[in-house]
Image 1 (cartoon, rainbow, N blue to C red):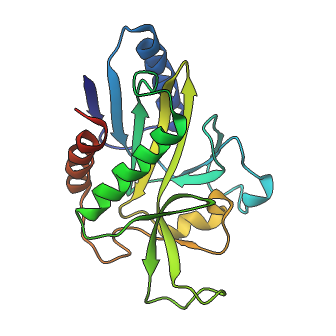
Image 2 (cartoon, helix red, strand yellow):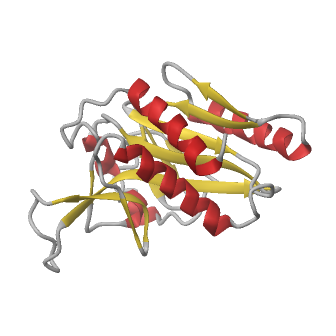
Length: 216
């Protein structure tokens, strides 16, 4: 049984991490159900385990939190749906790569409900969309922007942290970092793509496609 929790308002990052760590421990001990937690954070940057200090280009702009999740620098803030996934990966095959691929497939299927074609790229974490109305890249290929980030941590085979999808955040807030260490591509959102999607709309699609990808 996977429980779903949706928090209104803005959730402090430290509170979220403390909750996730406690819940993950309870799941590992068999005393709590798996959980998907949907929320928004106030504006902040997080530094994953592979973060390069040079990629924090404006360290005084927002609070910076060191995170134990994989990955580099990311931004969280209002208008971005964060989905923290506390799932028993041991019961789901003990295959971390397959688990991450399922997270990617979940995001891609969710975006498809809004006629957004999300794609993954070798060497680039997250989910990307092509931007044919933007100038071509230096290599002559169609420009691409990132619409969703993925970063997880496992403890005793239970995951925490998770994914974030840009619904309608202030995209200028990403300027204080090099998102995920990638300089040659930009960041987009559903609103930036011209899609008036609400958080409620996205939450319904996330739940429906989670069950299609992972099971109820």
